[in-house]
Length: 271
Image (cartoon, rainbow, N blue to C red; front, side, top):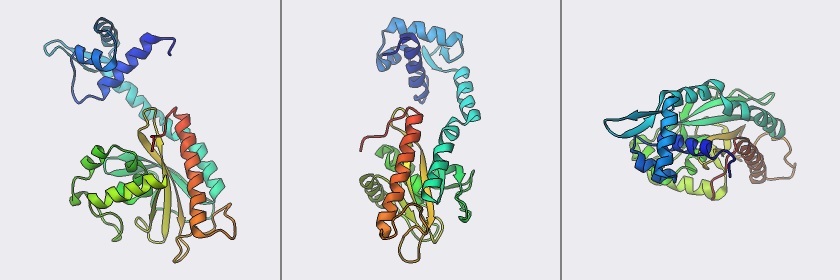
């Protein structure tokens, strides 16, 4: 339990308001947050005085204030996710000998915000600032697999939502559902040649405190011709087959994603 219950309650109120599509009445805030109505009024008054909520007296409702927007803007400016992830990502590259990157969801795309290129490895299309279709990338699939099914359906309502780069990948909602089911069962996402022919990737999602996927860590490697095997993967046993090497790479990515999730004080979504 928090030693500052008033602060905890105020933050819960703010989080609830931020998740609503429009301002809401005080009775609903009190009910959803689980605090007395009188306490809710006191909190909302104090938060309105500081600009974190706005009171709409004609509608008898409360919404998010300008100060909350300023806090969100500060988050964007400071890039805490990138700062938290950069060192573990570099350690991952050192361990597997392949390039790695961090991507965040952006509608039906993923946006790449960090790339750590392994020495001697070729440049990738997944450079910082690049957006790619989420359903074709390992990073996007890792994120989509941990989203609620209703949210995935809203993003991909029909076949028109699916982009094709090289004739590979899911081409409709049913194929995507099957792919995401396999991803959840496996514990990590994969793609092979769907973004760039001759390259494959494995990825695992990073989660926030609600277990919501906020990013994904991926390793991309050149395929050995006809095998799907990572060429020159560091740490792989010489006698290990391609499937074993991919599993070892996936395990390293999983450990890194979990470490970043822990740094964010997040929690992996139960499978």
